[in-house]
Amino acid sequence: MYRQQLTVLTGNTARDVGRVFSLLGEAGIDVRAHCLVDNGEIHAKLRLIVAEPERAAAALAAGKLTAVLNEVVVIEVEDRPGALGRILDALAAVPVAVSYTYTAVSPRPGTAVMVFRFSDNALAEEALRQQGIRTLSAA
Picture 1 (cartoon, one colour):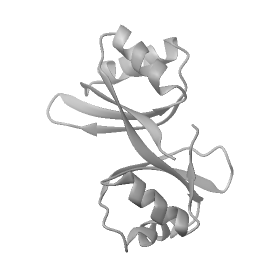
Picture 2: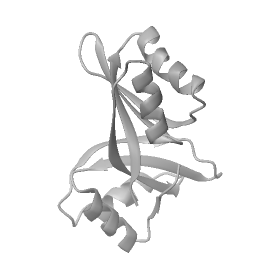
Picture 3: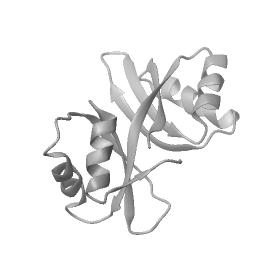
């Protein structure tokens, strides 16, 4: 099952990025994972997995920030060497591209949580499921 991810275009200063997290904190929204990518001299793309994506988007909109919701696949893997290789090997036979990936803190010891955006999330998720790789449906 897919997860909704927020993508926010923001400035790349500590003040700009901090404002996103402050608005979410003021709204009581828990951030589970994030990835910040520099998008040029003064811009950044902030991707977030949050507990309540639609409420988070509304909180950011109230603060005059635009957040786009899109779907990602969230996977739980063993926290050990070679785990990412196993995931990618499971996808080798299907025609999907990895658009991006980042990691998140896992609530369970001995596991890692990885967020993926694929060119075809449904195809990738089915290939992973067939290989016994667990996807997560709730933040």
